[in-house]
Image (cartoon, rainbow, N blue to C red; front, side, top):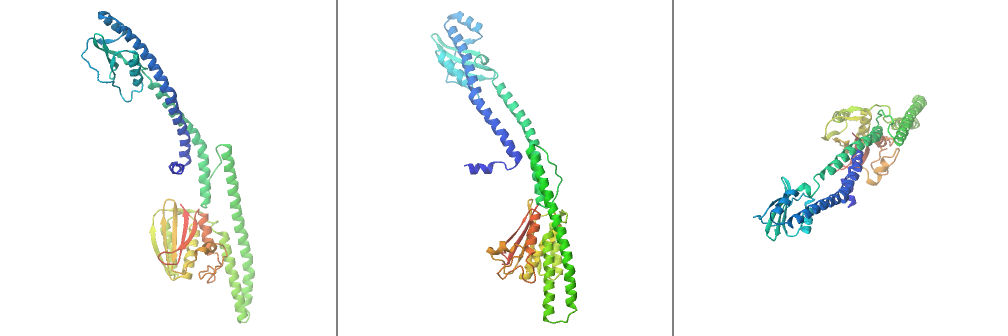
Length: 430
């Protein structure tokens, strides 16, 4: 039961806050209405009806014209003898105090055959059996029940609604800084830096300040890492260039060729590691049309002689992303597909929540137990499909996953149902 109610509850912070406000107010109103107001007005109605019943008893005790005089003096209108015949009590379903009026009159006034409560105008009519025959009597309704019981209910409801709006206004001012903090954290998770200033209660301000400190430390760390690795790459390329130049001047033999291959491998390792460490930290996000971006990537691959085709494309619009980084990630996936297969298909699905770029090939694929390992930097697989095969350094999928995560998404590896090879889903949050 509680699990079903969980899905009916609002998921947003404002919706839950409104629920927290409204449920207690409505519950209190129901309890007060049932336990106090109903009993209070039932007791008031009973007392007023008892007073009228005593007057009717006194009037019925009189005879002849004296009865008419007493009725006129007490504000009753009577018809005696009368042709009215009662067939049962009549009252409106929404007349809450009418039940108590009828019960009291039947208990205290002997001979009551019928009690009829009319609403237009407000009056009580009854047929009473007397020794001289039936008597028809009419009395104003205001004499037997409170004339304005609804005023307290209306006042309570209006006050509750007003106080609910006032309380929601105050609560909204406390919730807005939390939503601002959530928006700033979400944007930072997508690789975007938005302006944020801590506001609200002390605890929210403390959380906001901690977020800003954390964001600054992460940005400094990324910047320092990029600068350090750029310097290392520059420093290592100089002796590698000297080694390549020195080896090129030696006589060509098997040892020289082996050393040149080692120097080339070292150069690729340095470039790959630098690309992985740098990621897309130095690029600013911008609104980009995914369809145009993927078309450009596919066209570049086709011009390079790669067997790449365009797959299904669903959705339209622009997405905030880093174009160069996304291009590098998709090109890594295409390169892996071309390396191990003879056909690569690139498509995408765009929704309000994310952009899903799908790259499939007809190669041997990656066994399911080894897919997580394939995303690890410098991983070496024992299967036929090894990301390191063909001169790679085992960083292509790791770089792609890092770029997806920096956009608030992820990289999913599975099996292509159509082509039979690897299916890579590059997902970024919109």
